[in-house]
Image 1 (tube, one colour):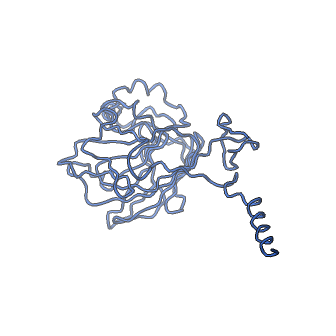
Image 2 (cartoon, one colour):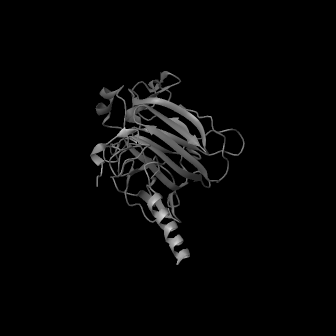
Image 3 (cartoon, helix red, strand yellow):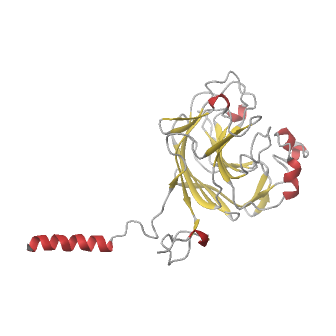
Amino acid sequence: MKSISIIFLVIGFISCNSDPIDSNTEEWMPLFNGKDLTDWKIKMARREVGVNYKNTFRVEDDMIRIVYEDYDVFENDYGHMYYKTPFSHYKLRFEYRFLGDQTPGGENWNVRNSGIMLHSQSAESNAFEQYFPVSIELQLLGGLGTVDRTTGNLCTPGTAVVFQNELDFTHCISASSKTYHGDQWVKAEAIVLGSESIIHIIENDTVLSYSQPQIDQYFISKDYQGSDWEMMGVTNYEYWKPKAGTLIDQGYIALQAESHSIDFKNIELLNLCGCMDKTAKNFKSYYIKADNSSCVYN
């Protein structure tokens, strides 16, 4: 009886004092269920929302696969697949790998080139012909076997950022990452803090940081003398141009289809916006932006 009492005492001590899900425990949310494209919306250039042209976006073996097996030739069939919910303050992590050769018809600069769009406009708000959403792109590049080629770069379709303390209108800014050749998996992460700052991380190394993402007057570069919105299929450019200089504090996450096959897996998000009332059941100490409308109490 004495030994049994001790066992119950130990069990009671553990059950009363252990708290496996406390305010410090990070609750990462999978954005992909591993089975289908539920919660994602597809928008491809010259296609209606929801049209998965030539089965470009697929799910196989717990991966989201962007493939071009059914293409004879790529004809500016740019596409993006958007997660259903916009976010403002969060961490995003995922793994990616490039596969095989470039699709016939794809641009030379699109060889082993893709990306994840942050703070993006919605799928529905894209113009019918639009190639790329107004967004901040975490650009992913694969090595070509010889020279250095960084990944985790920044590209800015319709946007600009403050980089190294100056407003920078450069369309693509290189990161400081290593080069990853071949078809290997690469781990990437973004820390997005509204309109304050964004950090790119590749294989646990911080490779790029910038701040104040905002709408730009030009879609790509002023070198195109203002015509680049129309060149990229943004026929509703008059909506965007008056917004130049407007900070972007939230938006959608989208996976890019840009003519080279790429796989994504383990796509997870840690929301940094939530209940910051310490008396609530769902308070988290790592939240940095309050949304107390989401608080849950006993």
